[in-house]
Length: 354
Image 1 (cartoon, rainbow, N blue to C red):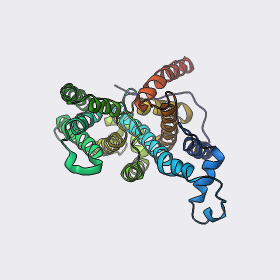
Image 2 (tube, rainbow, N blue to C red):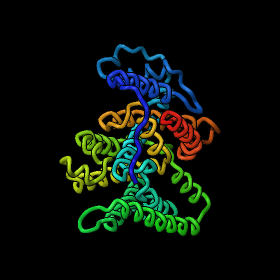
Image 3 (spheres, rainbow, N blue to C red):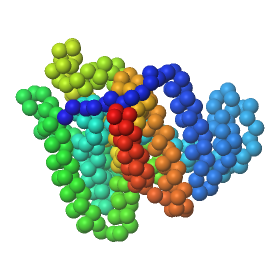
Image 4 (tube, one colour):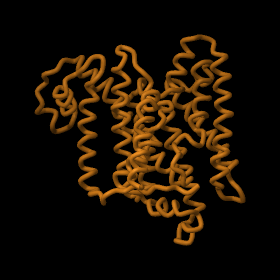
């Protein structure tokens, strides 16, 4: 299954593109931190945020009330920041998986990590199996589930000491089905309707429980994994040519594949642990990025991270405003919005190739 990542595009001016996207990300941060059932004006939000910056804050006159500051700093800002990190991680993870398996349809959850995380998380939410882990029992149990799944998939996919890509995909599908069956058994045995509703909401993907403490690990993992991938961008480019061609050009394919499996699994597992399963971002964003900047992973990785973060933040804003005061799971909206957009992208790219 050879990848066909060839879109017609002009040579991008990366400095300008990254600069524009950083400005859009900053504007997104300011607007999204003020939008919700109780809205705070953008200028007020900007002043509140500036007041927290050392050296600048003293010069900002406090023209807002305590409630607005609590909403922006305590409630919305951690959610927006988590959305940026989650979106960036999913997009980068999607890029990694598509390079690893050389398949356009690969996404962060192709190895079954989301199903494994869901099985352990629902077991904890409905039956309190991981309550001994304390406040962060949900996140930790989901990460344990993702880790157990990838260990099984990795073990099954090894043939004579190296990863067999076909077997990796097939074992991921098989383990996904097993974990999905276990999740269904757990939910059908739910002791109460409220617990079942909470479990279903979490599995659909949500940033509703965002806290500042949730940001540390996902951000650290994103920075480390992004650094590793950027260092190995040439290997990602050559891997798309096939294992033999990449090896002939000086790439240690076996080591690179192991590294990519570890990086993708770590990012996906940590992301699912804090946000549930948010689909379509890791599939759609890499394709759109390649339409903008081509197939060079040195350009694809940073642009995908920024696009993914901005996308998830705005979808989350829509999720909490469409049926106010209730809110929709982010994963449902990414699927509803992402599906038609992705189809349009495919049609557009096909017309350009013709």
